[in-house]
Amino acid sequence: MIGRREGALMRNNSSHSQWKSKVVTAVAIGVLIGCIFAFLFPNGFFYSVPTSTSSNRHLSLAGSKTQENPAECESSDRLNMLKSELVAVSDKNAELKKQVKELTERLRFAEQGKDQAQKQFLALGKQQKAGPFGTVKGLRTNPTVVPDESVNPRLVKLLEKIAVRQELIVALANRNVKEMLEVWFTNIKRVNITNYLVVALDDEIEQFCQSNQVPVYKRDPDAAVDNIGKTGGNHKVSGLKFRILREFLQLGYGVLLSDVDIVYLQNPFDHLYRDSDVESMSDGHDNRTAYGFNDVFDEPAMGWARYAHTMRIWVYNSGFFYIRPTIPSIELLDRVATRLSKEDAWDQAVFNEELFFPSHPGYEGLHAAKRTMDMYMFMNSKVLFKTVRNDEKLNKLKPVIVHVNYHPDKLPRMKAVVEFYVNGKQDALKAFPEGSNW
Ligand SMILES: *[C@@H]1O[C@H](CO)[C@@H](O)[C@H](O)[C@H]1NC(C)=O
Ligand SMILES: *[C@@H]1O[C@H](CO)[C@@H](O)[C@H](O)[C@H]1NC(C)=O
Image: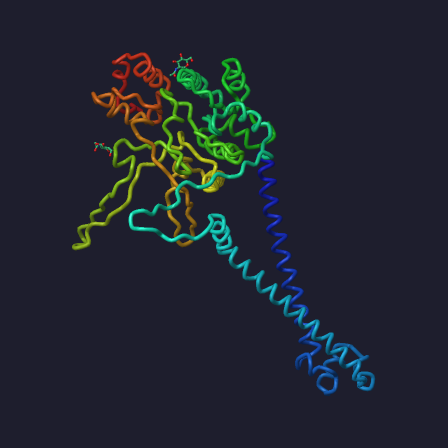
């Protein structure tokens, strides 16, 4: 599959270079014709009939002896014929020049990315008037892509059976997370979610899923990238995740990407807004950190201007997010996967940098719409163990999911979450420290 995708990239490249080479050829032809005319007719087309000595000299330099003899060219018929031929050729030359100019212009636009912008603008339709004060709303829900089933027909067949309203939960798993995976799918089944799929990264997980009636998909063993899944550490598997995810989006499916250290307590598809390219749970632990705040930086030495306002938000959790099949979403996945293949970086940091950093000199930012999920409904384990379990009101609310992302003792905490929320054991969460003891 990776091979196929890279094939597609190469096709893009080659069509781009074909186009480029056409431009170069056209330019070359134009220049060549220009040179020939400049050389043959240095005084312009209509003064170039060999009557003057200077043109004779040039023609003889060009090695043409036939036109050196004026007597042979004197016939006015022949002269007129020659003239009209020249007009025709010069017209053609002008046409070519025009084409070259247009192509050069297009090349320049393309290089500046403006061509793309124009295309997007055309795709979005008619220009509109703004409308009255307070009634305008920018575009945030981008159109979904046209599904390209040729990308992976085998996966298409599977998804047609599993997905509900073109959506599903997807998790990647290898044998290292087998026990957590079991808690994961047991709770998914308990809340009657049917549209979920495990992407098995090794045979053991594939068999484990099959024997538990868990929908499972194993990629074709062709891609070198797949070896990462078997042996790679967490970060490398995370890079693979973005590449695999792309295929689901290309096939036109909305994906709720899920780590396996997550306990499902309700069906998340009943709690999505679906208005943004990316809708993600937060690593934040209160209103400010989860949803963004103005963090004032104080520099007393600046006197009157000592306060600098900064925008801050805790990162989105790249282990649980809903991503719609749109162009900006796919661009995000590509950008993250590309960077992870080149840098030894944490995928969650890269995911957030690509999502949030604006364009600036030397950098073109992503234009994706984003939404932060409700932190009490899509709860991280810091919120649970720091705040919610100690709050008489909040601990009565049943979250949609709990993600044990902040704690290394994942399995016991997942089981405790089940005890607390599913089996109603009020003290199930009590024994655990707020943070980890390293
Ligand atoms: C799941 O489905 C079963 C059988 O239809 C039903 O008894 C149960 O209440 C459902 N559970 C939820 C959480 O909807
Ligand atoms: C957080 O925001 C919600 C919604 O705006 C609000 O109801 C709640 O009181 C806020 N919590 C705190 C602690 O400020």
